[in-house]
Amino acid sequence: MSQNFLVDRHALELVVKAAAPEGLVLEPGSGEGVLTWALAEAGARVVGYEIDPRLAGRLAARTRDDPRIEVVRGDFVAARPPREPFAVVGNIPYSATSRIVDWCLDAPALTSATLLTQLEYARKRSGDYGRWSLVTVRSWPWFRWELGERIGRHSFRPVPSVDSAILRIERRPQPLVRAGRGYRELVELGFGGVGGTLRASLRRRYDGVDAALAAAGIPRDAVVAFVHPDQWAVLWERLCR
Image (cartoon, rainbow, N blue to C red; front, side, top):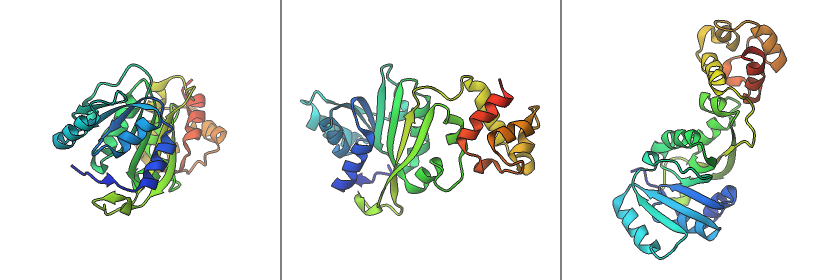
């Protein structure tokens, strides 16, 4: 089940500090409950999801008298998102990272997600390599993506083959664009890769591409991965309004 349990107290403290938990917090993959207890102690009301029936039963038994903690035996991504504002905090399985992130981005009441993920994934999604992924750019008007502290592989048992990092996804108070469908269509066309440049891809559908690129400060020969997400909001403003 791709379970690598967090055993380093300092790393645990870094996750809780990054999350700044309050109110309702959902935890994917509660495991043995180390993070679950820490979130509750920090003031959160925690609903922990654990797909392993043995671990879920053990944690439920240990927390049955604690009103701050509820344990759900099941798959987190099969859960219905709460209607009230909530955050997600978790040491998540590497194999389920994309599904959990997609679930978070689709939840209307999500305020933030603080996820302990594979280091490479966190770096790619936060632009730390100087390149930007489709997932990040497509969601950027609604969410900030930030790379947090690096967590070494020896902070886990069993020890995985790679290091991890804290990835923070936080909903913006106000979106950068108002037309979500139009923006996403623009981004998906840009990432389509036709012609080798962003300019070539966008000119298939939009007029005034050269002027829009100039307004956003994007070179005409720019490859899509190197265009900063903030520049996409300018493109949308010029091409889609």
